[in-house]
Length: 349
Ligand code: DOR
Ligand code: ZN
Image (cartoon, rainbow, N blue to C red):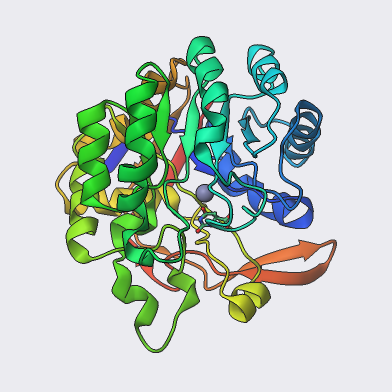
């Protein structure tokens, strides 16, 4: 039986939601990860210091008493973002980073940015103060094919930002194309890669009829892109790090509106590990999961360890959302019903 012990990982891109869903799912992340960057696209987006403080409080209250998990909060940029609020929040350790959603690019992004150039003054201050900018990199121009939106964003929006703000700490989130893989390395910026984009290509959405279980944004692309992502993630290169983009949606909503998002936190580590094993790159897993992120963000790696063992691991069909004794909803996890080859054996703080 193979085992692998790594420094406790961090999740550099995570959706935790609020209320009951938050309470029911937080443990999947908090038990295995030291920290997570929490996305601010809650129903009422996190656009102020006060809202970030109260969201963080609700997350911490949902943790078990002994948990050492640290949620890292982000500010949701809008056309009206107040520069002082942003930078003050960063300097006072309320915000770890700012998140840029182009308006209507994805779930809960209607308050996002309509004209990115209007934020250049803000980027200037972020560059000066070292505040990271996390980007959902897709254009929303309806003329642009959905499968091309990341590449067009890189050409139209990201290239000018990189050129104009060479010292701005930039992360292109959940990359999905070989074009993005190349851009990230050529321009020395950071990128998160999700487990689902390493496992599925765009066919997954169309097997056996339209299947919203595999619908996320940016959508999975052609196979050649998946292969480029696999080789980037498993390369051990410093640009690429773990960001699950785990995004829970209640089954009833997913089935009804096909909302974008894949809930992978119950299996994220095991899912990534499967890919690293298939690519003969288990030696690089610790870099991707536990070292490259801290190195990029200038924070120390976690102190704890995670021991993984290669044993069959049957994934549940659904995760229940409970309120007291009652099941009030269900969420389908990524790899539902599959048997993965790895499981977590031991966690130390
Ligand atoms: O698939 C996605 N789901 N992509 C995002 O950018 C947002 C996320 C969500 O919040 O559900
Ligand atoms: Zn996300």
